[in-house]
Length: 68
Image (cartoon, rainbow, N blue to C red; front, side, top):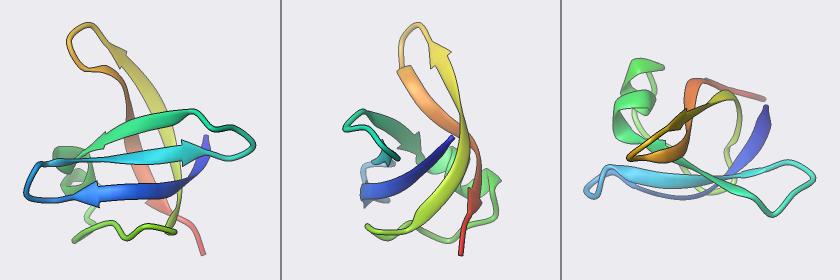
């Protein structure tokens, strides 16, 4: 999937990525940001990612990769 960072709050440990061509927002957790080797996310950043569905956490982004 491809999307754009809508918001990210490192202190809360969560943010949102809006999917391209859609208003759907997917959660992104600080653990996934760190796992990708990224220091932070900034609104407007474009990302490639996969979506994982969890019972307690709903849908969230994994395998993050920044796009130019």
